[in-house]
Image (cartoon, rainbow, N blue to C red; front, top):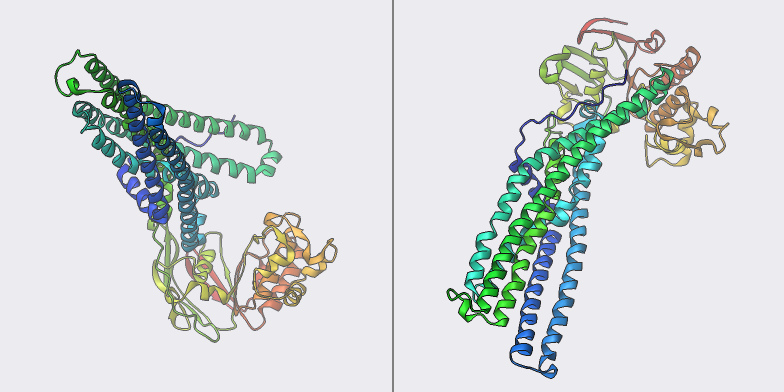
Length: 575
């Protein structure tokens, strides 16, 4: 049976106005280019007004007054200048819009990355990688049209029609009234249609996020799926997810086309009414209002201005789908930026000297306090202690390590370092004093030497070589084509689990931190490799404080204290 694709997005109520306000606040990241883009759009429209006036005046002089070419060439020169200025303003509009959008996206992406970094690994572990990727890439890219086109055009649409009316009313107030009455129908219809469009856009992004997470999960587990003969079935699930996304996208596009069609209807009706009034007035069939006083110049100018009056609104409607997409994207972006940290990071320097660590009645709960990970844990780790945290999976071992790393804050109690609350200590200063070795070492695309140097980026090659020798990386690196300068793939592709763990150990040797934290450092290793890794850990542990979370009896043997955890509580302690 084919797997069930990600469920379709729900339609929970979300405040469009709040999303719109959030988007406008982000415009402060590129206030100047957005303002200049709008100014270029207004200048482009004013050049159009000048062109219309000059064209109408040329025809008035040539047809009605019999002026020759020698009399008209200054007007033609003015027309050429207005056309060139209009083209320049149009180019400036496009260029500055691209600058504004790029500036907002770059700065917003940096803000979100900083926020994700501040929230820490504990927050990221609760979210799917594909969803975060959509937030950082697709959602931010969806803001492009909003800041490049829609937001500047919304300012143009507020100013330029008023300026055009100011030019039309002195010449023909009846046509001005017609345009004034018809104008508000356009934004009204856009707003009504936009309510539905924004909801559909949100659903589209939710489906995209789920599809991306679904696809990434299957891609990462492709080997397992093949082993169990599920690869083809999962392809069908991905196809169903893609169809759901296509369906949502088409719904958004249908609404966007409806918005443009409604604008064209009202604009066409208004222009037709103005044209009928001017035409009948010039023919003498209307004797009221300004019709008896219409000339070729005034009639033609008003006729040329009627489409130009709606042009800013027409462009705004054409860009309205950019606003819809941005509002849909804003939901996920605002969620990340508005997520509060568990506690504000302190700025106090890390206490100097040997590290004396104390857990004082510490409790941590997940899922809004419904599931306790650690309950009332009190224990002291003296300088130079080698402590093993043991217990069943879910007993709270990794949570205690996460507290020491500063990735989580206790819901109750305190973690003290040399008598100072860990919450008051600068997190970066704290982590400079800690070496970390996890169950699955994270290796990045680059050379072995680059990956080891992560422990201390300023270290020279000689220091890296010594750390590699201590961790016995040089033993397998010697057989590689370029030794420590051999490239390795992302996530350590090309290395065995034991070799990757040795690289992580080399980082710890290079960092030379007084506190070493290890989380299941020998999990999934064979007995011989485990023994080699543990021998390197023993060398690393000399003169340092070590805390290791493990199920392995062999790994427990490196500790001089064993603390048994059960359901988040300390049950026993043994030497």
